[in-house]
Image 1: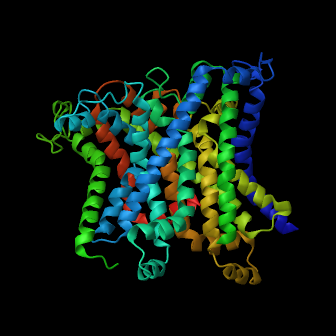
Image 2: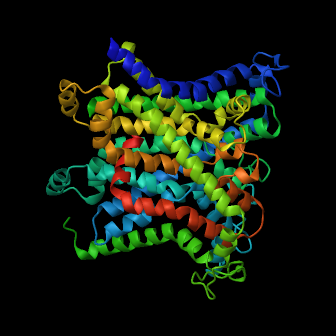
Length: 288
Length: 276
């Protein structure tokens, strides 16, 4: 009995902080999403589901959803493909690979704003390093951030450069946990390199691939800082993601009710991803 | 692995190429920080500075601006990390070692996970109102508090694993000798966990050091900006301040690179542990 009480006392500070900083804000957002209001509940008018109805007929919101989904899918798939390639490459074991790993991981260590600063310079149309490189090999410069058709892909490129190292690390750890005896046995049975990859490596790596995919999709779904600093959501609405949309609603136009409805939609989507993640962890815990 | 030299050479070259591509933007930053403006605002692709200069470092360190922003970032990072550890350690210990009633531990852990996944902007509007109500809007203390949205779940998540690693027999022995909980924590659990707490401290500090969203939304006075918000301001100003940005980027990255080099082993373990 006294042990129970001790446990509760120890949990209390964390519980209070989390309740005040997360539960209360979530509850308040949920409540506010049913009101039309500018500041809190003073003078707020209850409107039921109106904010949600408006949201789903707002073409800017629908555009933001489309942009966020495109960004998340492209960034996650790109990072998985490149991370897998790098991990397979490094896992082959050649001389000097120990020295190579820190270089491959380095972009992930940099602060996002430093990464963004570098790429904002690289994307400059006239003097950016990327266009300088293209022109040096005789190609035309690209309007990386000012073309509505390209800007979203440019953001994906930055995200891929910055976080492929994380995927690489997870997958490399996965590859190294595969028993070498399995490869040996397959080789003795006469299996070629491609067959070994498809029938042994990839199936055994699947849990790690899933983990990396989930972590990356959860993170890229939140994308805000790069968009804010590189394009501000533009040109037009070409790169406006859900976070950016919410930022403008809540902090530029002060439409707290509408912003809260957007927040709730985002939480709902995050909850689905969280559910998948939790299921994976619980299953992994039982197997391990 | 027994690969013949002939087949492994192309792969080695490919790996070197990949490393070069990953490193190029960082090499560019390193070079631009030492180039005069006339050299980097150009169409050339040479990375080696023709007339190396320290003007950008002198400019950013001499101005009132950067040192103040660095100090703000240091204060917020230390405060947020400390608060997360102080609240997170007892919670992690209780979750691992003490019997909690009615599956409270599971509920708590699921809750920690959910918070980790909620987009920061989805909480921003009500958090803004909470900060205003308690008078902490536009203060560094307010940032330290709101950073707990990220740092506290992360701290609990990381410390859980490290508490589990402390052999329970040590504690049992001390308990039989009559040591109370506080004494056991300070003389046994904390010392044994020291490397783990060190790793957690570094990972939390990196998280707080890089935080952007709440620092942008909850601070209005420029003299209280943190480093990322200051850098974002320079980026969006539509000028080619690349020399200065690179100098700031180098100065701002040095602490991270140094800690990584020093604590590589712990960090990779903590990083992967924190993800699962």
